Image (tube, rainbow, N blue to C red; front, side, top):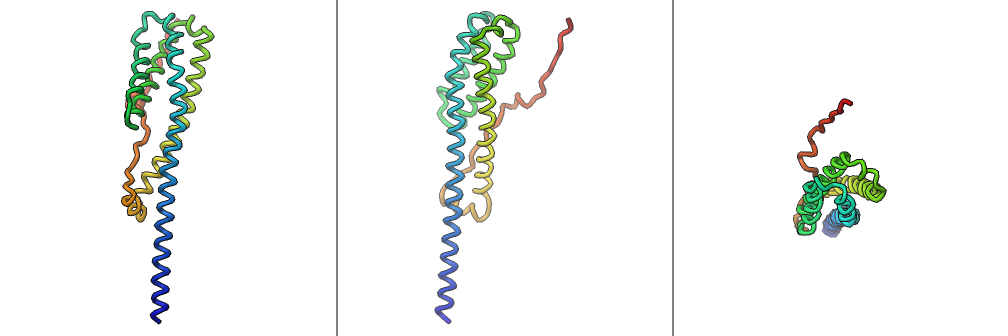
Amino acid sequence: MATVILLILLGIIIATVVYVIIIYNGLINLKHNIEKTWSNIDVLLKQRYDELPKLVSVCEGYMQHERAVLENVTKARSQLDSASSGGEVLDANNAITSALRSLFAVVENYPDLKADKAFRQLQSRITQLEDQIADRRELYNSSVNIFNIRIEQFPDIFVANMMRLTPRRLWQIEPAHREDVAIRFSQA
């Protein structure tokens, strides 16, 4: 009888250890998935970062009166250079996205610039990168959400606390980008 009780206790201990290992491995998998999705975003952000000086250079000749718009793009790019934490990188990239929107909106006033082949190619390339970044942001946020839920759920919370895992920050847009855009048609 004592042997049966000992075997049952041993079975419970082994099942508990196996369960903790499964939780641990699942959390490690999620943690590395977040890092992978962030690295995928980083590749695209680096490509966009490298394209920005070319775009500003093409625009400078045409947009002498729009220095502030070009300076905002350059300022946002240098903000990314000085970003050290993940949150600062997110904020700097949101600033670049905002500066690019302003730049592309102002370009509408410069038909010669819009017709410039180099500008069109750069604009197309950056727009393509922005679309890819948006897709990767969605994947990143999904990974972060799953991770944050898992580390707060019972019984995963115990293993997460032992691993000192903390919730990750979702990639969010600037509050100004949530507002409705006013669209006006000029009458000819």
